[in-house]
Length: 206
Image 1 (cartoon, rainbow, N blue to C red):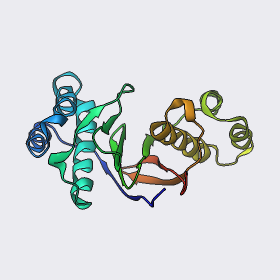
Image 2: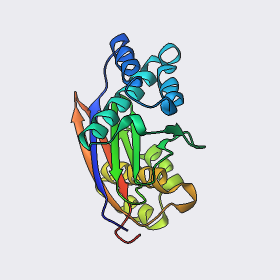
Image 3: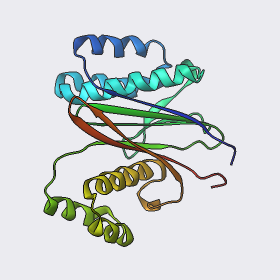
């Protein structure tokens, strides 16, 4: 597989009616084939303001990345797939993934032959030891779980594994997780909150 070019960006979300105006203004810079995606985002404004703010900020991150990489946005067709994930449906050399969690948004764009990418961000909730272990048993592999149970840094291991698994799922689909690939992981700290993120990309030759 040809080498992928990728970029990602994250932000702490904020905004209100001005954010709605900005999202509507962006609509005019995209093809009508993206209309359903814009309707989905702006439709949240009246129903769930917090969800709208997170989705609209993710849209702005996406727009900035597309412009940064010189993508002709007017030529794109963006729609949501059967899992509800927004994706480019008229190009196989461009993929993106957005994620948001309790006040933060993340977006990643990948460009190249058969491009694929998955991104996930999670707010580090203060789970009890028992609750964290209960959740870990629902998504970790046995080897991951064994390491987690022996770890002295359980919270770090928990959220790193969680975001890695979610980003891989977004890239490959549920039936292919866990899957091979390479990952970019990190932590964002802002306003006393801590967020873990992971970006899943295919291995060279995958």
